[in-house]
Length: 340
Image (cartoon, rainbow, N blue to C red):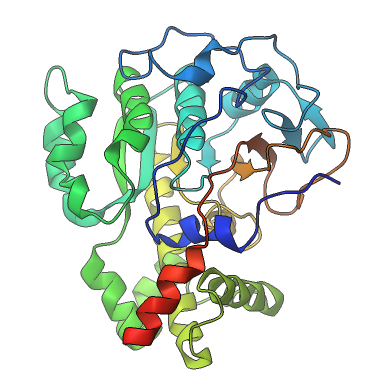
């Protein structure tokens, strides 16, 4: 079985511990053929030059695993599945530029009818009016969108990483919508838990329905590992509540967006997991046509695409990419805990 980089280091980017900007390997997308011309924002992207044919490559990097088919499939097969879905959830490691290029490629090339919306985890509700006004311009410039959203002070990786996604959405005249609640709401959940919400609001978000115990325990374990097992045990329930609140909020945003047409979610891989993330809340709401695509980092020497290197319960498709060398992501956190 290939040696994957879905370890403690790669999980850090799910939990928004902003790390260094990545280097995108030229070998990223062997087997990927783009069916639309690149925008100016993407024209220099090295990955677009790899058009060796519409098939899964022999090595794992660039391969797409279909949990439905129990086989590796072509990019065009993936696009066909996207075109048949109503809710398309695209996972990522936040600091991996390759993942955002793949998300942009899907947004550009999928045949989706109706008013397309792109919901982004990285934009919170406090920016809704600013975002709407920006997109209402006759020719919105995706380069300037980051400045408009004050992205540099948002805590997310550089806007340059997300620029391909924004450019693809704007070029398709898709709506771009906030995916997160305002920080003040999240802060209340962290401090008071679900007790800070009314019964009606809890019901609307499906947060009155507990996660299955096995999934709740797995979520807490992932939170602990993502923080290098340095968190006190008593902190985990509050962090689990925050994660669940964000997942439920994103599901609600997707449901609203899908009332007008297909909806695409851009979010961390942890948020799009079928068995406990946004898809779980969509399912509780009775949503149909949900498709989950995660981006999975693998090490450069992983060459086998003939085994099943994925948790089939987490996603419908897994697209394998290069990994980001993050060094020791626990080092900074250890120093932080020493000073607190």
